[in-house]
Length: 406
Image (cartoon, rainbow, N blue to C red; front, side, top):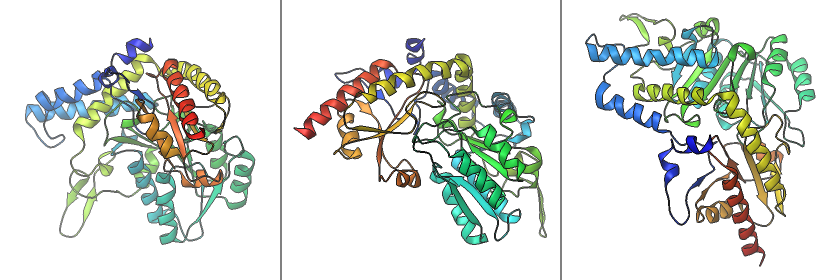
């Protein structure tokens, strides 16, 4: 199955003395032919503005664009298509929620509860809102294994009665899969709204917003084999109705007069301006790609790959792995340090061997601080990666060690 999947990715067919081993999928995934050809075909034969033209080409483009909204609704099992908002990515979706809630839902002294493993896209908008609105932000610490400390989480819920909880479904550094369904249920008991950052889970496992019962959920297209510049914000209908618009301009209006403006109904209220039409249609192709393989099949195969990688990395002397040491409730994301070698040096030397990894703080400085680190090396796998690529990585890391320790 893996060879058939890999054959759908042109960039993975690059040959040479050191073929590409692309292990930076938490940053962005490569794109299959189905996505590339869908976008190319749209620009070649279907390109037109959506929602505004009454001529045939524009109406066809609008129909295809809006069909993706239905596709996303089915993909994450939302109740209504109007609950699907197209954005430029998970960051934009999170910012839309933060901005909207800070406008009139939250008041001075209200508490926001995040975790130490959150991406900066969840932390920074709230810090700005807290400064402006005099809100208080609390952080749930992590266990030594790199999981959210549920005991402390429950205590913070009981103590502060937060109005909002923001939590990542899967850590982009540790690979930890958080119990977001349980965390959401606990948060709702104290009256908190919950936003789930699904950027790192959406391509690795089934995501059902009704089962999770989260109030909002955000993800990006480019981390799930789709194009950059597009993402989705899901929100419960009644909550999206209450939130004010985030971008003002064309399409998101119902009527504009000299005295006032009334806004369009959902989802148009949140989609001001010309939308990323080709990218949305490419997102639809990416969802079809995932559905054709099956998210349950992907999770099963990636769990095997995760276990294989954990065993292989464990055998490297001087390597310290961040996060869970077993494949249970874990995505194929592995961050680590090598004793005496800076992460950026490791990434640079791996690149010379055709192995692409990430080095740095991965937009998670608070998490790294909790491990007393400034940076780490991150290896992130997906459905087209193989055990042989992990073997290449291990051999290269051992060679790097010999070079530095000689």
